[in-house]
Amino acid sequence: MANPKIIFVNRYFYPDHSATSQMLSDLSFDLARDGYSVSIVTSRQLYDRANAALASDERVGNVQISRIWTTRFGRGGLLGRAVDYASFYVSAFWMLWRASTRGDVIVAKTDPPLISVVCALAAALRGGVLVNWIQDLFPEVATELDVKAVGPATPLARRLRNWSLRRAACNVVLGELMAQKLGEQKIGAESVRIIPNWADGDHINPLAREDNGLRREWALENKFVVGYSGNLGRAHEFYTILRAAEILRDRDDGVVLLFIGGGAQQTALEQWIDAHNLTNVLFRPYQPKEKLALSLSVPDVHLVCLKPGLEGLIVPSKFYGIAAAGRPTLFVGDPDGEIPRVLNAVNCGYAVRPGDPEGLVKLILALKSDSEACREMGLRARAEFERRFNRPRAVAAWKNLLDSFGLEKGVENPSSDYSRTV
Image (cartoon, rainbow, N blue to C red; front, side, top):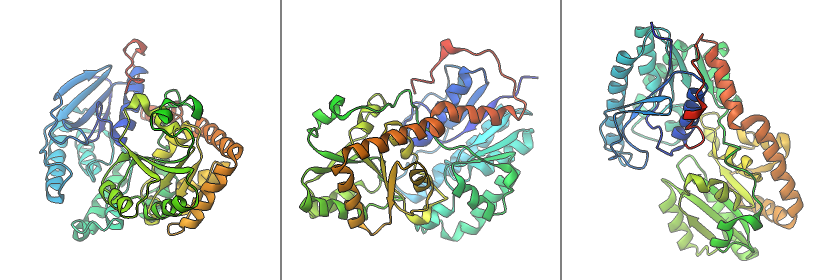
């Protein structure tokens, strides 16, 4: 009988560059490099290209990728998205039935929602071990974001989700508040393990502003740059930030707010900025991965925001890249949230409540006026990153967990290492 393998299940994987794909790609290639047998069950699409048609079967490095058939309606409409989800459930179950054997560890991420239910069924029928890697809690996130189509199905979705969590040998969550949420659902604490998300500290290093070519290219050399890097999604609270930009426009023309990224709220943000003549706000598109260290080092301070009702349901992963770049964070959201707890513990940033743009402005101007304090906050952020959130630490935690299930490693193969290219 073949040695047990690890089978990760997620809708997106390499070469896709969405957040869940990047985390999974990092972990999978690192594990495979270190001798673990790793397989992926994923779709043939890319996050921003529903009509993509990646190869159905591919081996990249030491990772075997099975890309299953799904419909391709994309993320534009709720009905089409639901059909895409349903087709992924069916195809993923069939692939797991065919490809998994007794003792395999099936790791279910949370895209699409409730994929853990499919994986729990497959693991039970094939004698596998289920691990849930929880990036967000559905249906609670949908409820908080007022996704009306989900409303009637919320009780059933929660029961199914909780059933799959109770079937798991381990439920990996991103922080203490998420672990508390599972406790409220009567999920046994013995099955819950906290492994935070991460960034790659070898790829993202602190870079002095005068050494950053992007600052020159974007004509920001003589500005104090307040950055927001990443997804402009519905989970994030931007009104406080925009009101702060309006105040700063009239109070200090040396401050620029820089958005790097895109997402569901981008059009609305651009319309608001135009309507209020916010000439101190710039937009730049997502930057290629090879420029990530540069783009994260353009701002002097970064913004992270999260609607307070989503604390414990989501942890903004952009914080880890910010800390890797050695920059302070200003958090707009619940001051007792997962990220503010880190900021307060090591003094590498501040939190303000939504609806307090004046408070945010005061913090920005205080950091602008004291460059040494700003720099020292960034150094503390990098030190905490290296202690808790660097990629090798997270991978080591995952290896410790997977080894507890009796997996046998093969020969390490650093010559086939894709782990630093994805």
